[in-house]
Length: 487
Ligand SMILES: [Fe+2]
Image (cartoon, rainbow, N blue to C red; front, top):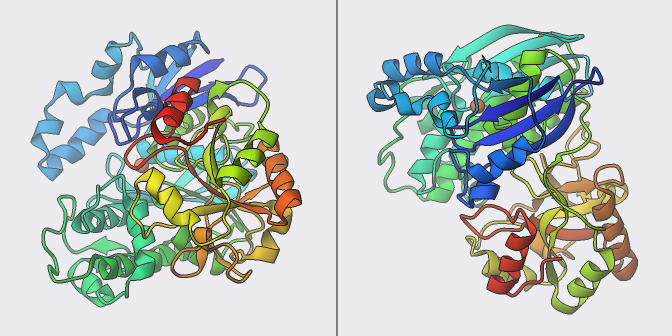
């Protein structure tokens, strides 16, 4: 039984293939459309990704990650007439171009919940899903036991924490449904001066309810405000509202939390939430947003566990991880690109499509920012040997490792690595063990042996507004264009 899962016509199209012939699901491949079309957050599939997917076929079934007709009822309610009445907005219309026929449709939040639960190490858990919007659902809480998921609570459109955060993303001059992570980074520079105003004008905290529909943004709310203060304010409100949702989820009695949906990418909030100590174990799939639902819809349809090994599921570049060549380049030029092995399925580069740099010294942050053309205030993430993490970072309560960069943590090792420190002294840290990524682990070990430092700056191998390097040609183009070697 081989199943193709698809997410498209949304903000980050993706495809996944799972094989159930051994009884448990094995992910054969999963990838983002943007890496093939070179259009960041591409809404649509393209021939190149479809061709690669088909190399894993033929498929017994094709599953889609949401219910388009149900979505249209919400679009009618919201007055999105063009979308609601457009046949070309139906996924089957788009997939006809590739001769793909959808066999099954799964509800949006059921795809999120299944992506989380069926890849988790838990057999019993509570699942909390928080995103901007599915068809109608914006927050859902389910319980899961053995293989069964049971929905317990749902909050529906227009009451949405994700939409609220996206409205502030837009208000601060960023691209909504895409650049929320930049707003999160800005929050460290501001004061939460507008927190009470946000509650007064927009939000009832418990139970979560919006006082007005913010789907079309905030217009010029507080035009005098510094965007950094707005970012700090909405981050504070989001963390408080999420804390309330986590507490509600914890009332179902499980000590295991599966946390899903795009809001689970907010690693600053994740730190706050872990520190609440409401759960002993937390699982967040490295791709908890809609792209991960290309995998989730398969699991939701099959109601069967997936043998989760790693997020390295995309396009494969054959060859040994070039440890020695990377070390040489880091020593000579302080930074180097790596495009090796299977591409990451998810928004973070975790060592296979990474731009790596020596994190020591004052000048490296500006050097890497210069190449990547990012806003200067944005921090870079560190990758560290898992066995050394507690000597350098204070991980949140109960978090033993963070292989997918899902939590921020305070740096506790003085001022020796300024390039990976955010303004508030935290980092979005990635721990690396041998089982996470053997090549990257060996590299960090060799780097430590050479320099005494177990940390490398790790940022995605792209420039602002472009998707990550995917294949060998992209790597060569990158070297030619930006003068940084890609190995
Ligand atoms: Fe979603």
